[in-house]
Image (cartoon, rainbow, N blue to C red; front, side, top):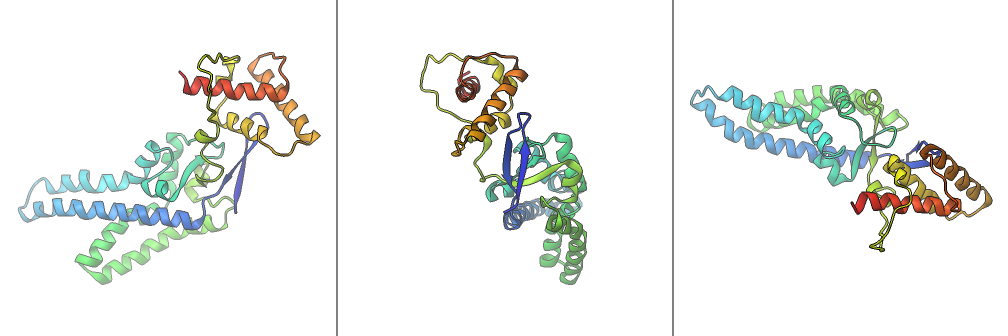
Length: 268
């Protein structure tokens, strides 16, 4: 099980499981199926235009067929938090190497440099050609596309974090979303007191990743002296960064931060 460890500004390590090849392959097949079905439906709409010599055929192919297929992966990953439909069903997603959602620039770099995308985008054309046109031509094109996909396949197989060429350039990785639960779920704490008053509004300067790390630290079952010293160090560093003072014990201080963070993010 490949694990990537990401440190927070407070020296708290978070672990993410690298998405397995099987899950990535499942996501790939689902996305190819969706694109192929879309392509087939659009061809059923656009095809009759050619029979009548319509001047709208080429614009229709461009705006209803080519562009949507080309931007399928990029647009879904941007607006679905690093997931296409296939990735969501397979339970995997893209994050950057800091554990955060990638920026739009990172998504674009990854999309441009992932040579294997050529394979995904043209598969519908190949299938359509094999079924409705020239079978031999479709097989040849399939082999050519597999050759284009080979560099990405090799880098995924040999790199420590199973990264494609585009992932290396963009600083992104594909992780198993179900491992250690979603950040938005792990940081959530139910605040039962309806009259709860937060103590440290400065906590909002922390990120979800920091809060998740604090929670993981407090949930450690190892109550050794080293762990307690570590908690003291983390609490002191957070106080210094946030510019706050507290007479609470370090463990209680960190617990208060969790409560305050959840109050500000869920109650307002």
